[in-house]
Image (tube, rainbow, N blue to C red):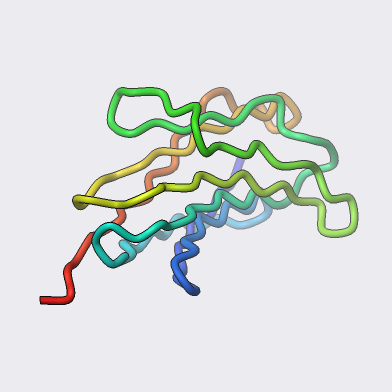
Length: 120
């Protein structure tokens, strides 16, 4: 099984990209203005059906509010799960856990570090 993790920033949307057809694993930190809403996305490609499960955590704490599991998109063979952070107050690492029985993956963890900064 091959996975690629890549983060990018676009208008406070931060993306973790996982591709079951690639062999590299790369991740980058992202930045968000303090007390600003941000959206983190976990995009999983190389699928032929919906993921069996997607979960988000902040440290060891499960997150249930602001989570959208996403739907399988046959045209792109992908699924995007999103986590909306209402007002990021401090630098934090969030984790997306994916389960895909199709690829023999159970609770595979992908970290997204969100660096929070202030204007002053």
